[in-house]
Length: 630
Image 1 (cartoon, rainbow, N blue to C red):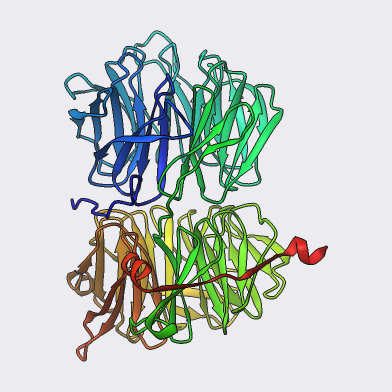
Image 2 (image 1 turned 90 degrees about the vertical axis):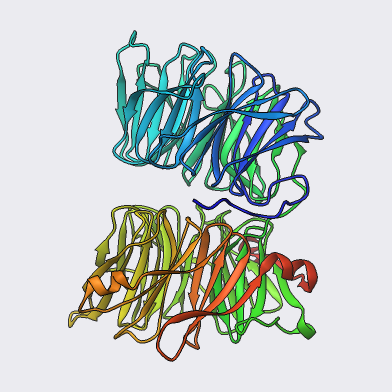
């Protein structure tokens, strides 16, 4: 397993923050990141957090938990399939105490039992396991889910609550004094938190509500929070209020009876994690450090000072490759790898100050979908923003004069391409629409409901299904398609247009090679014998030469074409038959074929180097649909 190797970003992280965790006294804050590190901050003065030490894993770090019995002990959970237990002293000097290393998949969350000697770890394999932090030994399995187990919380009384993508909420007692209880929801549950008294369990629902449950999992109250999924919950120390992070990009304050107190929106905030201690709220970020707020007033105390520019989306405009980033910049370079215009300078346009998740072009017009749930339109002079769409927009395409936006809520939003007004909302998938790809007569879609479909906005045809969510789909004209999945596989098949206007797939093959989730995919060459490219969270860029008549030969052709310093994020087939590939380490490649049809790297550049050495920026007038209506 390769180790993430990203350059430091000042005193903060080099990639977005996945988790924030206060020590109970509020004087230390641990922040976890996609850059594979945990930074422990001195937050005695929350207006000036000071980094004390940096702890390292080999993959992104998903969670941390401070020991309730020893304030110098911290557990960190990683996608490298380990939990590390560290001692961090008052001066910030750190030592690794032990590693819990027998996990079979990424660790999503970790929590201590009240004795401070045992840890509960929950994993993408669906299991909740109990470990001794004293010597690192496995003790027992305390629960299991049918899909990824997403979070664990332990009450003051030692009750263990776990939630998962299977919609199961489970409460168990590792010491066996209380009988286990469960509650089932129809959709994914990703967050939970016991109140400090242990009387209430807050459960963050995929439909945007938070349920307050008793210890027996009886419903006490449902609190509507957002039009998009609620992701994280944290309680005030006196249990009189709680804070929710939701996929609408906002933080929401409520009192215990469900009355809304505050709503804070900052497009830099990544609200997949929130924490409360000492009257301060901490939230994750797409920038390089934590956001801190006053618990009582919702006022911002401090915010990170540096952007991260990880690429999330690619599009083509003429001979320019456009790169959408975590910082909200769109960077333009020529598709031959040279800089775009301005005498060799890389051109950047600030679309927003939060992540751009998707890009699409129509002539000279550029569209961007954002995490904050907006679509932005740039015509070269003016930047126009849609009204809030209620959920992040991870995919965009243009279809028959309409802009189609795929949302985290599983909808196709049909937008006017000029005004960005919503013409129609269509329930399309039973999960987030992760990817849209235009083909003649329709478009392909891939979603977290594990399916790949083809057609117009309605009456779509299912092409195939994966064993887990589908991250991306790509096409080669109307003749071939390929998809990338969290199940570690790529599927490729021939497309056939039927007499009734529907679509079907033939000769579907499953391609193996990556050891982790496959994030992006593209096809090169002719449909009769294409090359499939795929990028994985294992840092590898893979290539297969497809033989539609011999799937064994296709598998045997698989090879690693390049290795990155972080996971790969996105790909785009360019009009000249090449493919652009980007990774979260900022590296961008252009891949083509030699005369024998083998894929090879033609151009390599690094986004961070370009941004620091030869950048010009443009500022556009911003208009919103609300201001136009006024």
